[in-house]
Image (tube, rainbow, N blue to C red; front, side, top):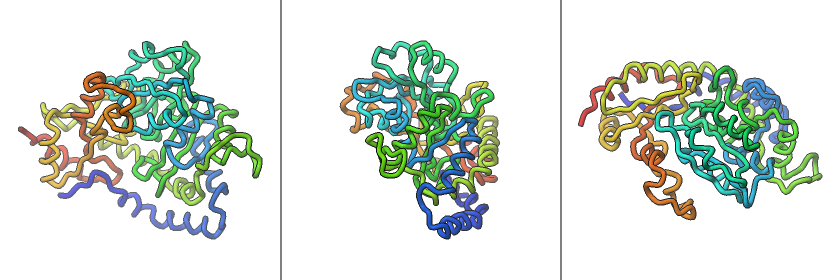
Length: 365
């Protein structure tokens, strides 16, 4: 059996006619920016997340960056982020001129360790970015409690967690604002780059909307030095087709994850864990092993494709050589980078999960 790491085909086959109709509808309207599809998607996604406002933008990185800019965060400021995250989280902070301050994750959940945040706060700290990594919500009660104590903002990086629950609330509604990516591989993915900001803060939403559109509050009237980062009509139309299916997609991922968690049994494999009061959406199913290279080779021989999130820790990337963080200074992050392996997880896997489970259980060195 050949099992890709991810496949869009099962969902695309299911909604092919709706996608074509959505494209044709936009084409017939001849309005490709700031039209009805974007407005309706923003309304629908805000309702889905349980917030008052959603503002579409070009991608998830822009969403994070523009939130930070809207809050006036910039040169001389510090923003706390997890050391174990995709580099976009740090890039958003760096683009403002502020300094990313890295906090180690909890090895059990891969998310930021709330017990280590407070010691990193200074009088320059303006925000904490809570990343819901791999679709698992971060420990938001602890994070928001610290933020309230020091009167700093909480920004959710929800790029991998569309529809995940923390207690009885969806991600995107847990902080002061949240950034989403709709990159095609996400649980809710466009057919190209796209993103959005969600919030209950009217003033923030209006400033974000202006910043995404050249700093303009109405045509040819510019109140900020803004950017060009808008959710176009075609991608919004595609997202509107997919949004009603998101819970169905997430439930299937949760069923596959439960099968992995209950049936993978190999002393060489460390399975992921989750906080008891969360409902992850399993964007990534991340296992760990000290024998990663051997396992990758073995699985590939069996036709099972894998990925690594992320093989080089952020602080070891050439892009952030300026941080001068030496090997071994962030040991938990480095341990995850050295041992994490992502196995297939996508809508429409059908019987592939059983094949993967059997293969992993038979792995030995």
